[in-house]
Amino acid sequence: MLISTISRKIDLLKNYVDHEQWFVLYTRSNFEKIIDKKLKELGFYSFLPLRKELRHWNERKVWIETPVFKSYIFIKTKFKKKDQVFKIAGILNYVRFESQLAILSEEEINKIKQLCFYKDKITIEYDKLETGKKMEICEGVLKGLKGFLTELNGVRKIRLYIESLNCFACITMDLDSFSIKYIS
Image (cartoon, rainbow, N blue to C red):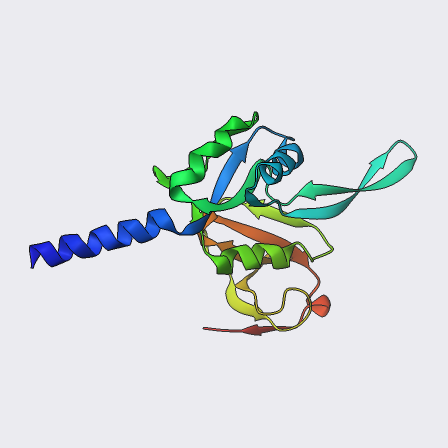
């Protein structure tokens, strides 16, 4: 009995070490694009979620790409190869929660990729409050995403939970611009 339990744990650990997983790198501020480029040059599969944002300088307006998650880059690699990224200047550490590495599922990565297609402002909130009515977006670029609809001081917000990062991607919305259904 004890030997079979230990054997199963060893198999799980081998699976954890030998398969590629999505880890989250924490970088110096405003170094995300440079580090993403260097990771790709070294042969790593990385993902830097970007979104276009209109910035105003003096009398001109410019569209720029900004990271959805400040100082975060997602990297898909094997556990035993993960420390090779520290050859790149500007990478500070891997993101951890309570000493555990943050590892994202393919589903969470796909949710983040889907968010990148949203044209309006997205904010990231790091609280664990799951308030509001549970809902699902029924159409548009965010179709299929589930979250919470909240309202504060007349402002409606959709909060999409990303469990592995302990955060919500939040979209301030006009109810007419989204087709949603409430779920239990």
